[in-house]
Image 1 (cartoon, rainbow, N blue to C red):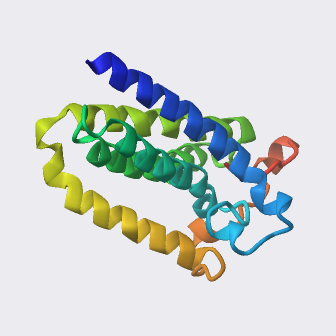
Image 2 (image 1 turned 135 degrees about the horizontal axis):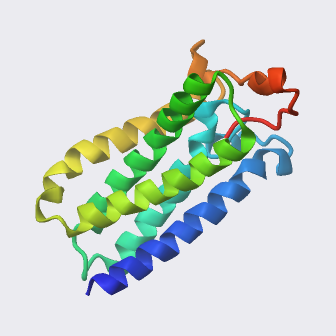
Length: 182
């Protein structure tokens, strides 16, 4: 029975990976459409790049809930937990490694996105199979809604904090070109 869950979550991981990678370019492709900017990155800040995972994972959570909730009644709770784990792993991993090195590297930044996808779906898998997971559903739902509201609110009116600022060319001392953050 867990084989079908693994299949659906693997398919979801591929969907999130592709949609997240493509969504990096949507804001430019739409001529900087303000509505699109609520759901895709509008700049190179770490905060905006958390959207690369958040919105595709949210869509996938809703889709998988509709498709497999009868077989896996805790799928929505699992996916919400995965949504939070994957989204929050992006700034955690980025600031940890770039803080240690003192600079960031584009290849590592891209890798962080895919590691976050894996973390999100591994969390979703484990929570979906855990009988006690539904006790976390109200908390996960509130946190996901808060993140959703924050993404919409801060897309065009971000507070003056580092996570909302566009990174500089930290690797300039290596004389490497800067291609942007995550």
